[in-house]
Amino acid sequence: MPKKIFSGVQPTGNLHLGNYLGAIKNFVDLNNDKENNCIFCVVDLHAITVKQDKDQLKNNIRETTAAFIASGIDPSRSIIFNQSEVQAHAEGSWMLSCMAPMGWLNRMTQFKEKAGKDKEKASVGLYIYPILMASDILLYDTSHVPVGEDQKQHLELTRDIAQKFNKDFDCRDFLKVPEPLIQKDFSRIMSLKDGLKKMSKSDPSDLSRINLTDSEDEIINKIKKAKTDSFPIPNEDQKLINRPEALNLLGIYSSISNQNLNKTLDEFGGKNFSDLKVKLAEILSSKISPISNEIKKLISDKQYLDKLLLEGANKAEAIAGKKIKEMKKIIGF
Ligand code: AQP
Image (cartoon, rainbow, N blue to C red; front, side, top):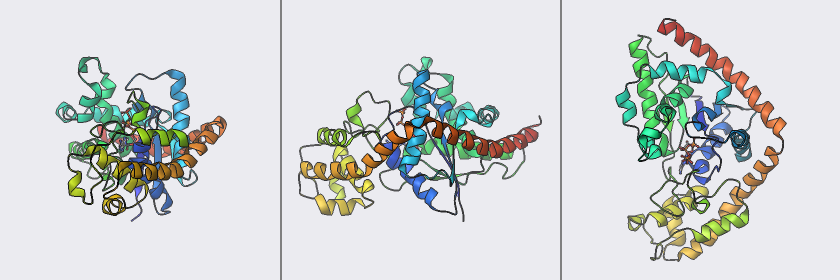
């Protein structure tokens, strides 16, 4: 069955290996299947749930677009656009927020993590972020949503919201209930400095992540400095329990080499981390450097990127605008 794919990435700078292995690599595979209809969105309305620099935001929108293309998404086969250009996203978000119970949102762990101790000062936007995400997905009758494991809870909420809307307004199947597409293994890439923390754009330490714009030298240096432990690499995965940094580096190697963990353990079991690090830096450089070079080339052509986003927004508007009209009618406007 052809799939209707929708997913998004926030233009918050520092796109990293976690975004690539957890989401964008999957986007490319789905885009390569000619049967699928893919929509990839630069979710700039989501980005402003935390403070953004005005000029930097514009550059980040272009850089995220460039990263999609540089990673292998073919813009002639997918719709690529930025969210703030299609009004239906914000409009749908409001309507859905009027029927989603607070109790559901109170359970969202990402808000708790991002708001931290100072919850009172976090924006209302950050709190209702998952409803905007539901609106993004549901406006396109999406069948599948490729995301990293950290977004699983938000996707479950999207499914609940769709079902509640259909029930409340007695409009069976009007909002399609989407399926998550989450990698089976290593769907959460961890920080290079702390194997218990997600690799993240907002980590103040640049050494915690491999950015998609890093040079070969930067990649080698970051992998060299990545945290490990003082034991050798084991032969069995059972022996990786309570060794989060070891598991993370072996997982990154497996994921980027498209092989399972056991095969990686066959290759490195009994060896030192220095051996793994040399090979890991090599393979990461060979995969990330071409993307990095292409991003740099693409962002120098602002006109091309802006035109592509505008064309994408027009196509997205045609789909989402129609859905929002139907949604309004169902509600009684
Ligand atoms: N560490 C990760 N491992 C696997 N997948 C990840 N994703 C993010 N981090 C990891 C996936 O990347 C896609 C785009 O994410 P996003 O930019 O929209 O938002 P995010 O999850 O908030 O990303 P960050 O890097 O963690 O940003 P900050 O630091 O701003 O919070 C999503 O599919 C996500 O699952």
